[in-house]
Length: 172
Image 1 (cartoon, one colour):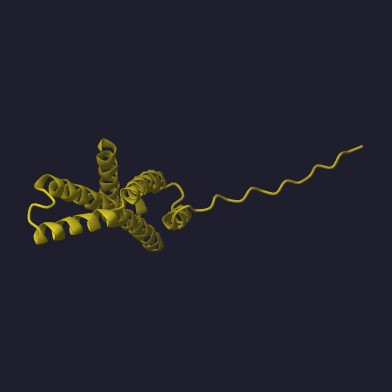
Image 2 (image 1 turned 180 degrees about the vertical axis):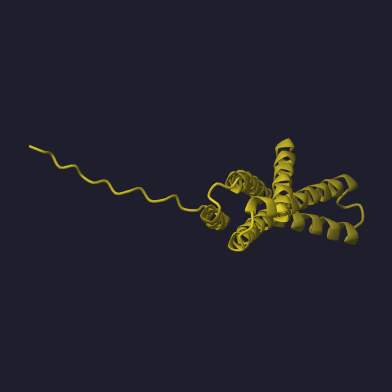
């Protein structure tokens, strides 16, 4: 008479794609526990979007660099310079200029990739500082939203740096 419903298992919670996603989720949970109505939670959502954009940019640059084969670029430039030193005029100025330009361009991309990774790490650390200071201020009975000026300012600077890097890479 009454049909039995098959119980569906609850879906697994989304897994973190990047290590910082777990760190950000932990920091967010800590802040939400201490001050559930804080505007900090909205700020952390903005930070998460900026970090995801930065990771996508970093991955895009890393993939491009991999396709450009920096090791081959370095090797070809070194070989050409060595040949030119041993037999002047054998390689030609135009070819050397192109090899140097390619090598320099690839290295600038590597620098951008590394700078993005560093900024992501710094931003996550600043979020963890914000969470720790939130707990500290809350434990002392202070007003969290009013006493987090410095960590919030660092976080704003981080988000601005990530946004600037994102805009710069989109312009390429």
